[in-house]
Image (cartoon, rainbow, N blue to C red; front, top):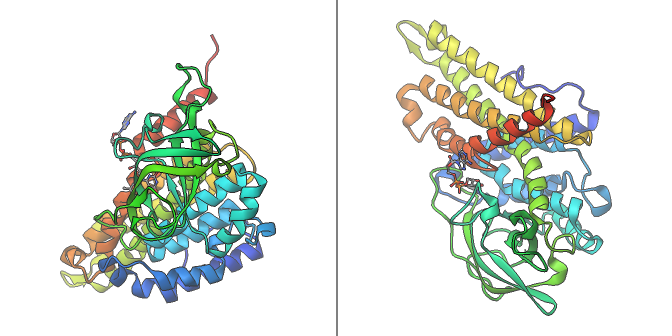
Length: 404
Ligand SMILES: Cc1cc2nc3c(=O)[nH]c(=O)nc-3n(C[C@H](O)[C@H](O)[C@H](O)COP(=O)(O)OP(=O)(O)OC[C@H]3O[C@@H](n4cnc5c(N)ncnc54)[C@H](O)[C@@H]3O)c2cc1C
């Protein structure tokens, strides 16, 4: 099949080489096994090992720490390719990437020296934990709390929805700490990111007393990758494992992480939509009704036209958001728009490809069935559509404020 859609102008030779390697890996190692593994809800161990070898876990980590030092754009385009193969695999990389990015931007020198080389090799793999059972969008309502005792913080609380919660061995956990703050201080000033090293696995953690990962949450899609709760009962976190070395900065650190994470979720939406389009346009030429391929019925052709337009538009928005960040500019507006649009379009393109498959789309034998269960996660993760619109709306009013 040709690659007419979702092309990116102005890439360097190195970027093109990386992307072609990743695409080759996806075609050979991911696509042939993705649906089967997903149906079994099986962690893609072999795929992860292959991605480690390709250096994908260290794609954006600076070369001085053993990574490839690539841009957010390269990273996002790689994620788009991987999600085209299987969205869950991009989920395994995404939280790792957010934690590495937060360390790179906000970590102390000791934290960077200690974690980043291991993260670049994929030996330390990150999970990112803001959400709790009682909150997701409303981050300022976090209740998990760390209280200073000597040279450590004692943390108590419960976290929810940790992608890679079981398989990771480093979790960046956002908690409340209110050291030295007046009672009426705004909630976001009392937040701190703790870096908790743990053993991978489920149940009480053998390495960290009081830390439990109860088990995998059963999900409608996005299987293979583990999503978990995290229970913290008197967990002692050494003071030197406060991200950046001082408390009260966690909210900003996490929001910075989520902003680049949003470009990634947009990239995932682009990848899944692209695959759905490929499946839809192939099937439409094979299936005959009323004496001709269904692709020759105008109603189906119009669907294909709409799908392709959405694939193209979402890709260009995602690329724009990544390039904005790479140029050192604030990109919350573009990242919010790209995430919102790519997630919505992904859901619509997948649904159209599903309709084109007729009854077969409902059969587990066809890949589109998996995509249909995967797309909705993108509407929620890294901030729902409503949260994106709040960010977009606020920024627009800043940019277009009228005088007087
Ligand atoms: C598979 C999966 C993986 C995830 N992985 C992670 C992870 O790795 N780390 C992590 O920290 N979190 C993770 N999450 C959590 C995710 O970020 C939250 O689910 C998401 O932010 C929404 O929060 P919520 O589920 O609490 O919904 P709520 O915040 O309760 O929202 C419910 C509904 O109300 C709407 N709403 C809320 N506030 C407003 C408002 N002010 N105005 C208008 N509408 C509003 C929302 O848009 C939504 O439609 C994951 C979630 C899923 C499903």
